[in-house]
Amino acid sequence: MRKLFLAAILGFTIISCSNNANSNNTAADANAKFDRYKENFIESLWKLYPGWASGVGYHKYDSLLVIPDEAMRNSELAFSKANLDSLAQFKQDELNDNNKTDYILIENQLRGIQWSVTDLKSYEWNPSEYNVCGSFAEMLNNNYDSLEVRLHNFNLRMGSIPAYYEAAKKNIKNPTAEHTQLAIEQNSGGTSVFTTDLQDALAKSKLSDAEKKR
Image (cartoon, rainbow, N blue to C red; front, side, top):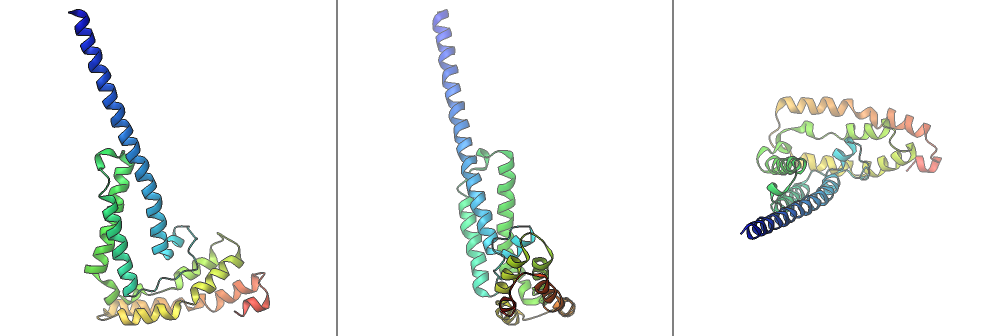
């Protein structure tokens, strides 16, 4: 009887350890997959919002200026829906605490994007949203790369400015007086980036005269 009892306990212990191992393996797999998902998500996020990326020190997409038109808003909504669908594939109870937190942060960010586009619609009433000066000033003033590389990206991004403000004009429908005045002040105050600051940077650079005229 004692041997049978011990055999039964041993059998139970082996089964329990096996289940725990399987559970641990499942959790490890889930967290590894989620970590890979996060890497892809962040890269896609920075590609969608290159200005935001530049602001936090990621400069891979510095040459891009997002045109704030309907196509961009559709891209934002598609991005949000696709990633919310991806998140739904993960079970939160299989994730470690860090990944649970990241899951919620990502979900909130995605739902925030949707709400901003479909409900808040500040692109229709807040003209102060449309100001490229700050991001261009950062490219000149922050030494994250050589001045020549920064000026090259500056030039490429600058080519999209006309389309940027054309889209802004089409978006604005019911601007508030306060935000309109703020937009005027901010854009007027930032013009020195493209006159004084840019000329000073060109003078300091090692670009040829031909390159400076482009």
